[in-house]
Length: 113
Length: 111
Image (cartoon, rainbow over all chains, first blue to last red; front, side):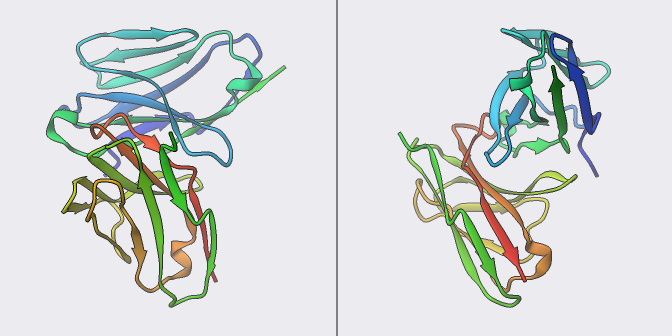
């Protein structure tokens, strides 16, 4: 059972454009929804995260939109830059229940000039 | 501040050999975990620990063993390596199960 479904698998965006990656989850107990960014040869790094009591969180060019009723959340990268080219993973966990993070399968983003 | 340190970075094994991937963190995190990353499969949880002396299985635990005798260390043991265990292994730690700090990864090839 895949608890977090992520799409698309790959994404090509023009420099300056908006990159959008979507995720859907099944477990309504999840209370923490992070996005991780991974560059080739490196470990994933926490990019931005949201809790289900808010519908949107913005940090610089990165925004998470959260729809609790639809059990979906998405990452928006505004003014995408070539340096944003990386693999992005959505994830979810029930932190208050001490359950481990479950990851989506990842989206490989390429930002071209 | 070293963060999460994994050793070795690269390893080649023959089928049937055993080995231990080391993981150490210096952030006094209670939570530690091991993931494997394979193309198209994302990050899959192998084992995790919520504190010293406590371990539990993740999604893909078969063929792997862990122990947590100290807060700092969480080694992953491959009991009898198989080609299907060829992967990149990541150790991660955190104050809770959500906000994780990952190591640089250990790349394992089993021939």
